[in-house]
Structures are given as C-alpha cells and as structure tokens.
Image (cartoon, rainbow, N blue to C red):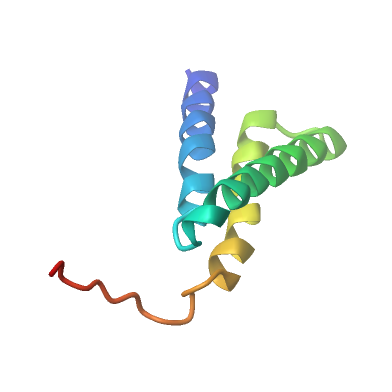
Length: 88
C-alpha cells in the first residue's frame, strides 16, 4: 500500500514541480528551467538515496523540492507581486 502511495507522489511531483518552477520564466526559457529542475531533482535524489540507503521514490520527491526552491526564490518576478491586466 505505501509503495503505491509513494509512486503516486513521485509521478505527481515529477509532473508538477518542474512546471511550477518554470511558470514565472519567459516562454523561451521555460522548457530549459523545467528540464533542469527535473534532472537535478532526479539525479540528486538518486545519489542521496544511494549514499544514505533511503527509499528512492521519496528521496527523489524531496530532491525535486530542493531543486525547486532556489529556482522559485531567485526567478524573475519572485520579489514583486504579479499584476494581471484585463484584456482590451
């Protein structure tokens, strides 16, 4: 039961976290930012899982979150509130 639950967390985190990280970037950079967050999260999670003998799926989710945080905090528009304009 818990193995299936971790698998669901891993799939949703793999889909949502890179996309959420790339959301504030210009359209031309979004794909690069998303792939970078995904690759760093997976590689970091796999390495940490191997080094510390921890469950791989859960550690990859944490790795994705750790890769997401600096991108979200330091990305464009992170210090200012986004204002949506009404279509004209």
